[in-house]
Image 1 (spheres, rainbow, N blue to C red):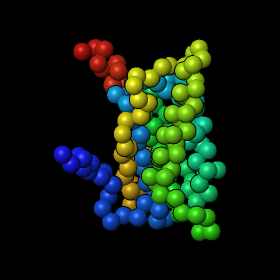
Image 2 (cartoon, rainbow, N blue to C red; image 1 turned 120 degrees about the vertical axis):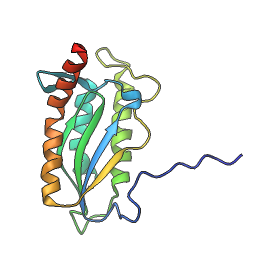
Image 3 (cartoon, one colour; image 1 turned 60 degrees about the vertical axis):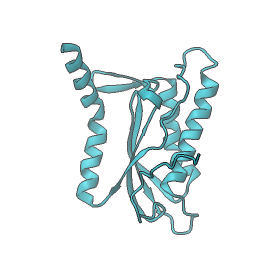
Image 4 (tube, rainbow, N blue to C red; image 1 turned 30 degrees about the horizontal axis):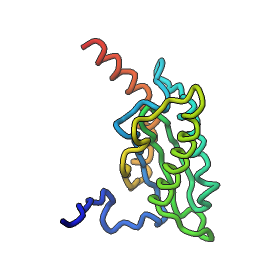
Length: 166
């Protein structure tokens, strides 16, 4: 029996180390609400959510050729924009390199954290396999994506209220 081939979700032919912007969404396994809650249209992060935000902010320190832009840590996912290839003298890192490091860093911190009180335990795995990305193709699209990210907590709140009324 041959191993199952996994289909790539990456855009064929795009160099993910090439200078440019990429919109990233990384979800928890089973969409577990580990990173906090949404209250009054804002995210109130848990300790795990604070760790995820700190790791996201640390990306430019770990990868000198990568800059972060707008991001939000939601209860069960993280949205953010990365700009790669921003430092021509730096070693180029792919979006995959950055996401792999981010997931591993948050996982290591959460694994240690759940041994202490106040940390939400996770069920089986912390992260969903893979991640979603979208190449930012223009300045206008960048504005739309930034608005989408910033409005995500309010959309979450509206969806929860709608589900409660149903």
